[in-house]
Image (cartoon, rainbow over all chains, first blue to last red; front, side, top):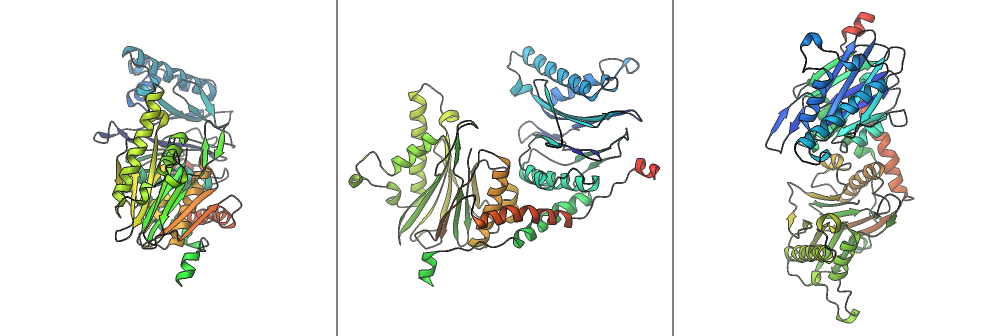
Length: 253
Length: 253
C-alpha cells in the first residue's frame, strides 16, 4: 500500500507521499514515490505514484527517457504545452505500461500491475493544476469543490482532511494538516510508513518553494504525532457528555 | 456497507451499529443490524451483523427458530452453557447459511453471500465476552490487548477509537467515543447511515442497562457532530506550526 495526497490551495500546491513498499508484510522496502521536474521560471511538474512498483518505476523511467543516453534524453513533461497535455502523456504511458506487463504474462492486468498517479504543477501563464490519473489512463482534475486527491490507503487519514482543509490556509497549516493525516494512517496501516516526502509549489514560482524528507526522528513530526493524541483527547473531553437514561440503573439506586 | 463496533470495558460492553443497507447507491434501505436476547438475571447475548442482508437475516431467523410455530421455538443462544458455545453456534449457522446460498446458485459464495458478525454477552458466573465471527464460521475473541472489534466500513472511524479508548472509561465516555467514530464514518461513506442502534451491557447485570435508537434529529448526536468539527479545528490550531525553511522565499524577501 501507499499513501499520497495532493492538495490545491489558493497559494499553490502541497504534495506529500510515504515511501513504504511491500510485497507481503514480510518484505518491506523504502522507495521514493514523489518525483518532480522543473524548468525554473517556466514550469514545475510533480508526479506521485501508488500501486505496482515495477509499473510506476517504469513509467517514471520512460518519462525521463532513461533507455537513451543522457545526451539524447527529452522529458516530454517539460515540453508539453499545457498541464492537460502533461496529464494525458502520463495517463497514456501508465495505461500502456500496465497493458504491456499484462499481455507479456498472459495475465489480466489491472489487479496485478495496476497503479494510479497524482500529477500536479503549473506552467507559466496558466493556473496551477492537479490531476488524478487512473490505471486506464484517463483522469480527473481537482477543483475547489474537491480540492485534494488521495491515492493508496485513503481512508484513515480522510476525516481530518475533510474537516481541517480550507482553500485559503497557508502552506504551514496545510503541511501540519497533512502530517496529522499521515500520522493517523501510519498508526493504523503497517503498509504505510515513514519517511515522508514533502513538496510545496507556490503559485507563479516555477521551482519548489520547499522540499523535505521527513523521517521518524524529525522533531516536528514527533511533536505532531504525540501532540495530536493529546489534543484529540482534550477535544474529546470538551464535548458534552452523554446521559444514560436507564430504568435498570434507576431501580438499582 | 455497514459499520458496527463492539467494545469491551472494565464496566461491561458497549455496542453500536448503523442501519443502512444498500444494493448500489440507488437502492438504500434501513434495516436493524443489532439483535439481543436475554434471560434477565442469568444471561444477555447480543449479535451485530455486516454483509449480505439475506444471509444475516436468515441467520438471525434461524437462531430464533422462526420456521417453527411460536410455541415450539427454542433459542439455542439462551440454552448454550458458555459464551464460547454461543459463538460456535452463531459461527456454524453463518457458515452453513453462506454455503447453502452459494451451492443453490452454483456460485462461489463468500463474495456474494458473505457476512461477518460480532457476538457479545455474559452468562452468570462467567466474564463478559466479545467475539468476531468470520464468514468461514471460525472466530476470534477480544482481550484488553485488542478490546474492540469493528465490522463493515472500519477505517474512517478507527483512528479516533485507537486514540480515545481506555478500558476504565465510563459508559457515557464510551458512547461519546462511538458517536464520534460513527459521525466520521457517516460523513465519509454514503453506505453507512443513521439511525444508529446503541446497546449498553453492564457487567453482572443480565439485561440491557441502556438501549436506544439514535436518528439524525437526536440533539446529542447533532451536538457531537457539529461540536467535533469545531473541537478538531481547535485541537489542530493548538498544535505547533511548521516552519518553512526555503532558499527561494528567502531570496525573494
